[in-house]
Image (cartoon, rainbow, N blue to C red; front, side, top):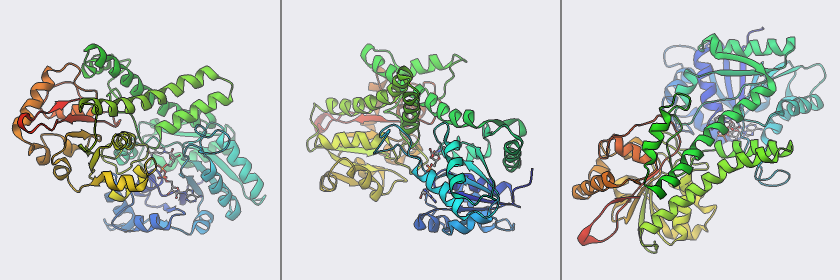
Length: 498
Ligand code: NAD
């Protein structure tokens, strides 16, 4: 295949930015330019304050963008979308594909408006042949729709090859996932042109990914494989979360259960940590997308099966908020609840679909005063997220955002850990360590005695730190939460795990 010399990535988000950075790092002879409609996002990518937080990202960006090791910079950002498209021989479409909120399939189907607008843009400005790569997660069959759009709008002497190359990175570990991917999937048509295009993209990845990890399959398998992978991962979390409810009702311990079950090599330990529910921009939307696909294929049982994965997740979030309320004598009115962590998991500032939004929302509705701290989420973002469900003046009145954990926790009736940031681990956190030591001692004792302690990765963090009986730890990345509820009885201060 003809080697690729110029790559254009449409979409400077969580996928487009890091993926392009790593491609540029390993392909110094290829010029990689990321474009976006958002001028602010592009300006941020050009600066020292990148628009997203991802461990190790800045180093890679600096290297390829600024040529810090003396190499020629080959990683660029631009808002001149038309020109960048026309100059490229390979174009990655990495735009957002949220769940549709209106019209046919609202609440389930993926909204392909951004993919469509990117495809139209390509068709309108391209004057030479291009390889078009679907990086966004899309429903099975989207390559056909892209082809129709391109055929309808492009000049007849320009040829497009369409590939599916779904991205499997997880936020928080994106750079590591990109540097050492489990697999690279490239879906193409099974004709010569398709195979050539797939070969060209495989060469780009071949600069750093071992050949045996680069898998070429058919377009539709590739599109469906991405949805299927996310759905299976989400399903594991909902399964373990549903079991946490049984544990709490019976005296079984969810962490012991997950450990015991995960030792079965057919099951394995990952994504088996119970939590307050999964979050993030992908799991819910992808499960709903698969359920909707099943519905349109007249497979109602299949659709219902996958929808139940989302239903359990909603149930888990609600259950968690209710437990906090119940523990504080069924009323939160005027009580202060500290929330540590607002991002949907550690090592990211992303709050899309974070369980914290729903849980804090319910605590606000109970009349609680909320004090929030997250190391990477801005006050503005927190207020914006909470304002979707509650009027701005209610959020303003009941929610305060702090710059550190200890200020957020001062005089709180309960401390709720909703993101498993390392700094909330008791052995690493001067903030949490500075909580009254007698209180912490009781916390340990009570947790040791409690069988139904909690069902969260947050517990795992405290447990790993030695405060609680050691138990297996797992390396999955679902969001967490732990609750330390400290009833405000000054004479007899107590800390309980909920
Ligand atoms: P994002 O919202 O962070 O980024 C998308 C960007 O595309 C935005 O900056 C938006 O302005 C830009 N955009 C939209 N339409 C455009 C157009 N026509 N021209 C130029 N720019 C345009 O989204 P994301 O989290 O990076 O996700 C992108 C896709 O990758 C989604 O389909 C998602 O499902 C998938 N994905 C996401 C992750 C993840 O962890 N976030 C992982 C794997 C796959």
